[in-house]
Amino acid sequence: IRTLAKHPPASVIDQLLSMPLPFSKHVVATLQTLAKDEEMLRDILLDHIFETLNNSQTVVDSGQDKTPSRESLACTCAIAHVVEVLPEGVLLGDRFPQFVGTLLLRFGTTAGMKTDKSRTDLLVSLRAYLEQTGEKTTLALMEEEKKALRSSKVKEYPRAVARLVNSLCMAHEHEIHRIYNFLLPYLRGNFIGQRVVVVSAYAEIVNCTREEELLQNIINALLTSINDDVLKLSAIIGLGNIASAGSDLVNQFAPPVIDALMASIDDKDEAIAIEAMHGLNGVFQIVEAPRVQPILINIIQRIRPHIEKPNAKIRTCAFELLGTLGRFGNGVAAATFIDQMHGLLPSVIIHLEDPDRGVQGACKLTMRALCPLLAAEDVNKIIDRKWFEPNIKLPYDRFAEEFAIAFANSYPEKASAYISSSIEYFQSKWPQLRCAAATLGGFLLGNLPNEARHTISIGIVTTAYITLLSGQKEASVRKAAAAAMKLLYEY
Image 1 (spheres, rainbow, N blue to C red):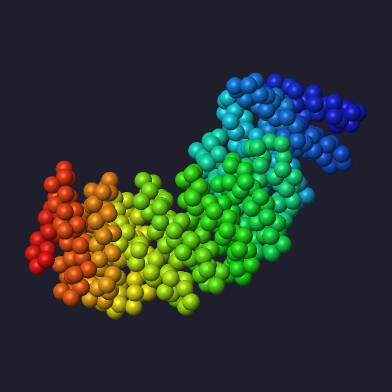
Image 2: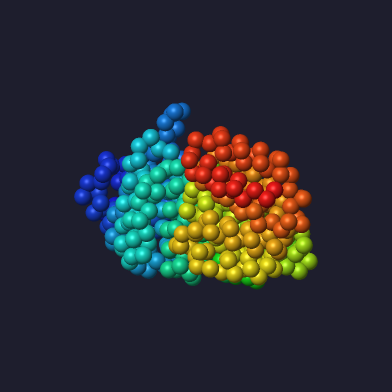
């Protein structure tokens, strides 16, 4: 067969790959024989497979349904058979970027098919390659992500592919640059699925390298990819990953990265908004203060709408980001930040009773980050208690009373604004927040020094509480309103 295949090899390979699927044992044995030939046939066979899968029309589009081409199915299956006989020097040496890159790109070109056969064949071939190269960690990851890897949804499979990229890059750090170079032409390729995979891979490579020039090239690619709605989510994730590169590189790339992430906080796609805030949170934990302080107000104003979103993940990210901004509440930005903080702190306190435990935990961390900026010793003593550890239930009524006492004594001139903010939450759709707002407002009213009570529009306050008391079906809300109203007897 080797002699026959050399005259001419392309025709023999085409004929073998045109045989019915799954390949018979005779076809498999023939392909493996060609793959063992070190002189010429191995390279011709592998080049043919890679060229077909990466650069040919792998999809037959009939208008409504997409099906994989016969050639792409055959080449995908062939990989599983030929890797069984290829030496390690080929699998992990010269051909490593081609094997890894081709298998990764195939996730993109098998997305959206009428049937999942092409994706199933891909997973078989990828598993065969990883088993042959001894990639136990990546194999375990494949099993962990098997559901996402079978998915064609652009918000599911790219994340799983990115995790595979991370595992392979961490195991073969010396190959990262070659993987980058192999994937680069497909960043501007004709097939959207390939572009999705490349951006997802680049986003994860950011976590795996400290090479300045490579990071600069990837950041530029991600910034460009943001303009494509299909690629934007992965690009935003990648830009946020720059936080893993260390303080020097973060500060170097901070201006364009921060601008891009900030612009995406308001995206109508909640997944993008979440990743933008998550990315900013990581960057802001490292970046130098002078790069952020001039835009603090802008950032806070962009965060504000998200703390009341129905999506608990968005609320969590918003509160976490707000807490991280406490890093910049000193120096030249102190007065500006503290003024903004007073506008949001009532929301943080009330959301300590958020129906979602993740949001509660984020608010606890934010309280510990922001309250020291108040320079109120009694408030700090409260925040330092075990109540604010993640897994401990906060006794909200007791906390609210002690906080109100400490705050009213330290900032009596701010109490009116906090009470007004609490009353705004009487309209919240969540009864837990209505209860928390009634409780906080009541304790602030009851503990406000006499000389500061003239700042309270008591008629508006009592009307709001009476409305809350009489208009709620939840007994817990009525109870909280009644408990607060009994504190108003001195007014």
